[in-house]
Length: 237
Image (cartoon, rainbow, N blue to C red; front, side, top):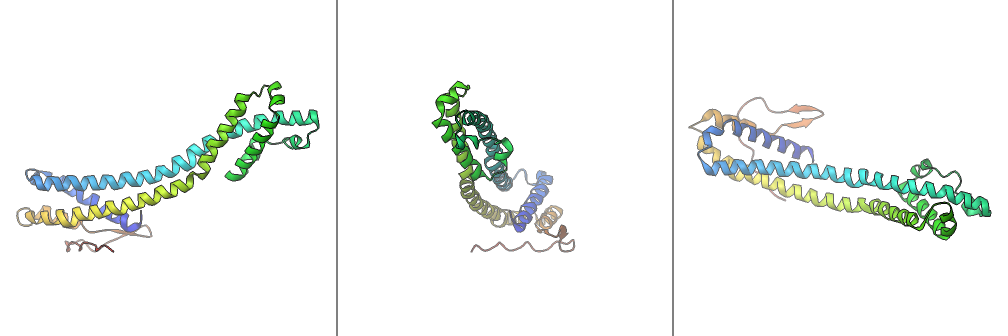
């Protein structure tokens, strides 16, 4: 989220904390209770969406990708070693190039180059399936290798899907913040007028909590402690 969005969310949380401290004052007024519950829901929805955006990157682009890559490379190296032995026996220059291909060889490549190298090994494996079987690499293992390559390929192209999903979540966040604005400006601010004279301390703390504190180079910047007018509702573009 942007700094203004973080500032607004923090402000909303301070407002909710203030309301919770004075819950006894408005607990018998169901319309006010409903508005407070809506505010709590708005905050939770924003935080959940923010968390989902983070997990989207971690799960799709990192954890699953690494697992799939490791599985593919483990099988590839095993097959490479046997292909080299076949090449040494048959003097096949292409298979002799399999010598020295280790896990590090694959990991040093970018994702697409690692995938290309694995596919080359797979092609050689299919061409020499009969010989591989005599060394214990049967058709099932070659199929498993092909599946591992396909799984890794899916996650290589996954970032584009991730970008699309993140854009959708960004749109969702904008809508959630619009809902938060409506809860604050259109409902809560108006409802709090009920307590202006009957509970001035509660009303004053509410207005103070509605001030937005922006972060500037790690330092909070705010106006001196005083009750100021609640800011006008942002206009939509």
